[in-house]
Length: 417
Ligand SMILES: *[C@@H]1O[C@H](CO)[C@@H](O)[C@H](O)[C@H]1NC(C)=O
Ligand SMILES: *[C@@H]1O[C@H](CO)[C@@H](O)[C@H](O)[C@H]1NC(C)=O
Ligand SMILES: *[C@@H]1O[C@H](CO)[C@@H](O)[C@H](O)[C@H]1NC(C)=O
Image (cartoon, rainbow, N blue to C red; front, side):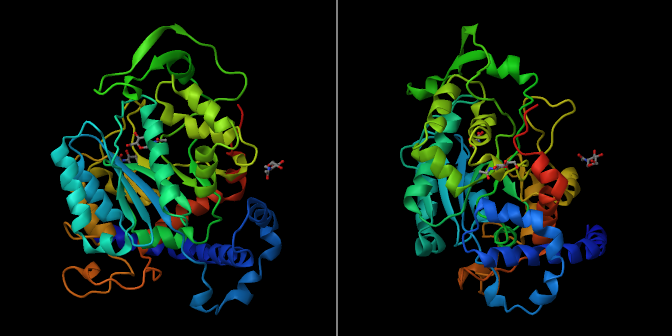
């Protein structure tokens, strides 16, 4: 592992120089307007060449003029039996600047719910910052049913109401895990316009036309007390003509303004689409994609990637492959900040803890806010605005640069095929 890491280090030198240059430009842009609008960001991409010597003026900027790190709002959800995994994912993802909402399926036994709540109350870090909430009125979530989307919207609504100052919403499950530290992601994201939405999408729905868009399903999780599978109507429906369907990965990193748009409902489109998707198989693979790409004010903010490393069979089957140690190299070189899916306590998780997060069992992934000495550095908590990005920031920055590279970025936004 060590040798491959040092090779990676060397390979990074040239891209690093380029990266630093691009970040400096981004920094300048971020500095020019405190709340960068889509407009200023995109005009920046057009002006790219003419500002090539900007670097000379920037060298020597004091650290205090770095853009303020963003705040991320996470929803971590799990099924019955996932209590301990939610806890582990939360520890790996925890940062005092961020916000966390935990959702444990209504089907989970009371004991499991109480244990998770007790853990939340017992940790002094959570108490101090008050940034972790567990959803009390849990939902029944039916696999492939619209209750998946309603739970995601529920979590986002709680985050919007409880915390006023976050920038991105990230929906994870208990079988997801981070591949970079929060310091890494906060550092890299501090250079990005806050209105970007990372969502993998396409209008080429292919086989999904027949298997997803035409069937009509009903999710009993919406109105029953007990869990059961979705059921199918015998009739099929036509493809919509009032809007264009988009589909893609069920994982996304969405901007606060877009989440407000979908939750507040001052424009009827998100609500109409929610009602349409009520009878749609696997709506998480389409709802946000279709809302975004049919909204003129948001479609230019899409980046066609879900920021996850997910491995599929060839050809892809219904479920992604469970990641193990043999996937470690591919996972890290993807630059993705998150990966899925992992089996409970798979050895690769401990390896990620050790190699990528510097996390000891049962503890938080350390960052600039952890100023203690000894076994648990996060036992003593310092300034949460101090970030200590590591090699993960370079990997993530590489991915972001590839995604925002000129020909690719625009040509992959909500394209109609
Ligand atoms: C959000 O997270 C859950 C995992 O609990 C997942 O099943 C769902 O598909 C995700 N995506 C969306 C868009 O809701
Ligand atoms: C989005 O991009 C298209 C094509 O570049 C442009 O015509 C349109 O005005 C942009 N919309 C917004 C809201 O910026
Ligand atoms: C890693 O990626 C390479 C190149 O894309 C691929 O050939 C290989 O099968 C992948 N390894 C695993 C374990 O998925």
